[in-house]
Image (cartoon, rainbow, N blue to C red; front, side, top):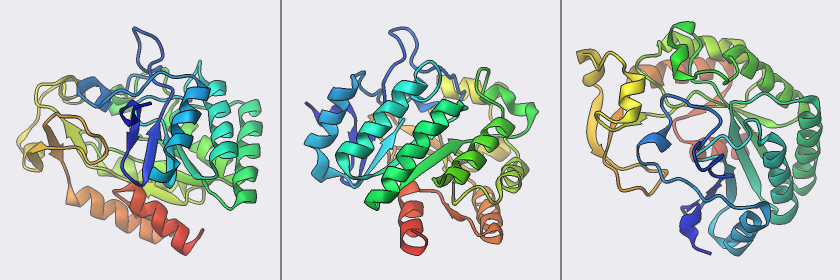
Length: 281
């Protein structure tokens, strides 16, 4: 089985359930989703094949990320994704991070509680990462229906924290069409429920699908000043040349707020997780 089915970089194994159907990649249609413009799509395999990949390559990673390219936990695949997570926990003896924008049912939370308890028993971590990229309704087009509202996702963070998960808030990527105040509002409303907060610079291809959906009115000069051209992704091995929007103002403002709230912040998940394990884990 080829490693190119998923993504390995020597530390992380990034996997997912792959496309939802032959005609629809993900149940959600985020405007900034990198899969639209070149991010390598992952394999569509059953649980046994995914576990075989992870077990065969166990020497090549120390943490497993679930949902690198699609939201595997969004309906109608929520139960299947949780079943996969539970098997991963039982069969790989490894830290696991999953990312989603979905809401969970009570039965889902029962499963997550079992998973969290098993990870604690074996000395491993479950990093439960909830993605919230905006708060204002003015930019709701970035996360169209049926994605749950930011408030609903904050409630998920609270519940996961109560269950004992290590909770991660992914405010990524930082987007220039979102006010930095939105990110501060998300942090304030999530305070007490999160251990780690993540930012990220924003990748897009000029004139591509992401560009057209995120910037329906084009890029103004103030945005363009913070754009660099011809970059490669550090978390995917695709061949595209990406423009990057990166704002020191956004990063510094969010970092200062996280310091105030005693939340670990980083623009890179690997750095944040290592700091968490070293200082709090």
